[in-house]
Length: 156
Image (cartoon, rainbow, N blue to C red; front, side, top):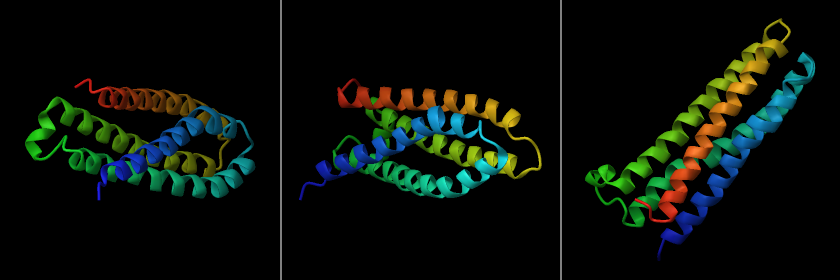
């Protein structure tokens, strides 16, 4: 059985869910969420955060697993030496960007939780965080999409 089409499908679907979720959260959900009063933020973070974390965790994990597998099964990377080829560097770059953005997301969520659980008015602390999240997510997603386009068009 040829696993490449299946790996490609799972990788692309997971990527769409993960990237779309990250963009939606950074540019729409969190900015609107951070304008609410502290109690609303606490309730929303508790119910929505669990669901989002599961979806983003599963899709992000699938990307990190299927991306390298796809490169290996597809023949683009057959040994560690291939990681230094132009294709290999794109694979490593995309993997690193997804991994770093995932860790940044974990730390941002912990920071948000600490801010809203503190006995302070959260909005002045959350607004700058929202701008930072937009910048980081926008840059990371643009870089990942650029790498995927380069790989898809064979520009390596």
